[in-house]
Length: 260
Image (cartoon, rainbow, N blue to C red; front, side, top):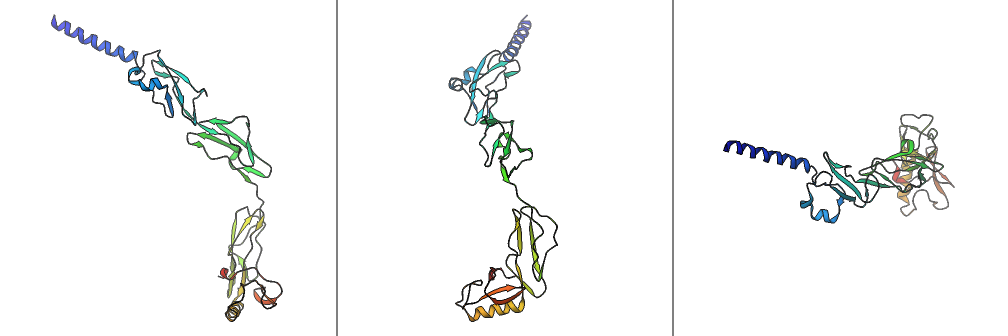
């Protein structure tokens, strides 16, 4: 008889334990970037785990939003946990990009997972294909930007006693670069590389023959107080023309620091 009572008591305890787990299936909801009411947060050891049908309210911290957009949202304990699932989504502010605007100009913010389209003003184009960006948990997938539409460049200008390294093609895009090289016994003066900027090439270098270069150094050695190359000296100027230095009234703008 005592064995029957012991077995019965064990079964009752087991059943009661299982029923208790079913009745209270909802633990304290730890919400990333979200909070429950102050009273629930303070007494969470008393309220949780919660029973089926019991409800709690939560809200999100600044910079985040509930899926519905309401400040306070109520969730209910069900047999499968809290419903709806409590979430706080990142908010991406819809600040108008420079030289452009969002298609839905009335919308001031987007929630995590939402996509937004933006349009650029005349002479500008969207940096992203289709002008679309996505709001992620870290903010915009990449900031919406409008970049200036740039014109292409024609082939780089040729220079005397030198050539374009690697040859040239008929068209170059904004930002493309090309380098020059001088013929044998000629030295490059100026920047070796030029860049296509809004349809125009930056200033190309010159190629000076070695004899003219030697003359130039001797001249400055004899005139240590002379102003920098390119300024008028004693009523005349020096200019690089056709790869040779000549006395003339005009002057090249190349500096000695660019001699290669």
